[in-house]
Image (tube, rainbow, N blue to C red; front, side):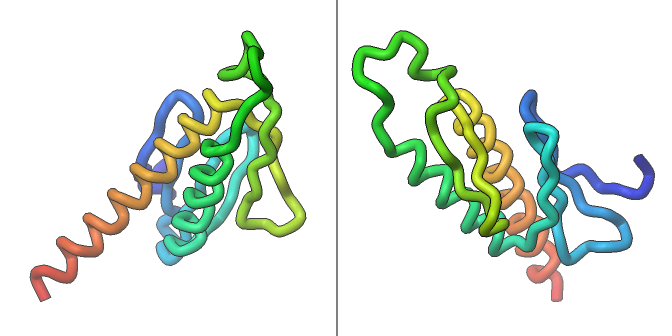
Length: 112
């Protein structure tokens, strides 16, 4: 694990940068990895927020855990079936990753 720098991790996934590929971020969850730019991560998070705004089946007792939502990924041919609980975790992972990357860039640029 010396080849990576962890950006953020939660119970659901992890984001990190490879030492040799600093321009992209590896985001891994649900046994799936995405190698993304910051802009792609932001776009992916927008997809998460759009799906979270959708309504679940009425009177469903499993509304938080039912995988009834299709999440569009940055890969145009891949959508993921996810639950609201999973969407919350993905949103946290992507949001924290964006925050940390932008904070790091701001600090680096502040001293130039």
